[in-house]
Image: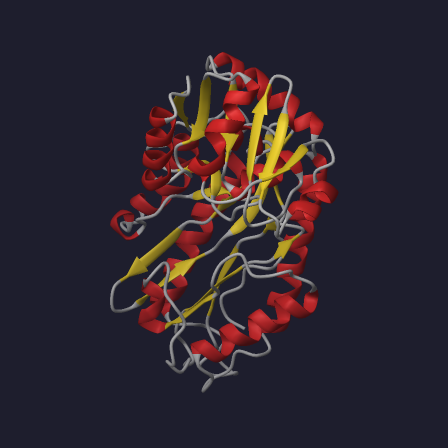
Length: 365
């Protein structure tokens, strides 16, 4: 962390013809500096790394970002940035277009014009995100801990799910388990969706009572030192203890989704286009006649954000490389009936996929 990551970023800033880059997305300035405060800006040039924040975080910034110059600022961006940049002699300043709002950009542009500051604002995208997509060993260790925690919480959660319990009750119990196991927070709202609700990929838990013999889709994750995990399983309570077979349609769809995921895990290689990786899994589902029921991408990168680069979709131009961490999560969703999704986190290592998630994939329990 710190100076090494700043050094990796600086050539990209120079290639864009910029004197400096303004980093405003919290995950990006955390990645580059170590600063975990919710309000801050990181200004990076060839010779400077200035962390600007308000009085609430000044001491925190000094402790967490020793490689940066900490400066205390007051007010909105336009209140202090033009004067600071003018003093440093910068004339071309890049900013994160995905992070700076139109309001902030407009006010900043007006101030630059009114003060007659010789400064050009240049939008940039994904300069830091590109670096973040390749995980360092320290990052992979933290992600692995988050995955292990999620696996452990899921094993405990299975004993909670029983006929008569509601989706909301299961979701709350899972959140408590994650906290008890050591998660510093949940990276996204936990999904517990049963029966027809499981046909909604991003369903919210409801008061619906879980019944035997129907799909119960669970999507959960943990966070360790800022790094996330993401995990999904589909379960079905056995209708009768003497008859472990679930509904034939559910068994069939589960088998297709599992084959789709296994095919992707075994076939994805370093250097492959993300769209090609998506196609490995999607082809299995399409050939089974459910292509229209798999409407989301195969997966996404996971790190300081639960959704980050790379994107494994049919129209993605991302290249999959060693060191990347992402999900593989095919699904089939049938309106009015329900859905099945199986999601694991993986990393590319020595050209091949290594699965980080350890929880078993078993429909009936």
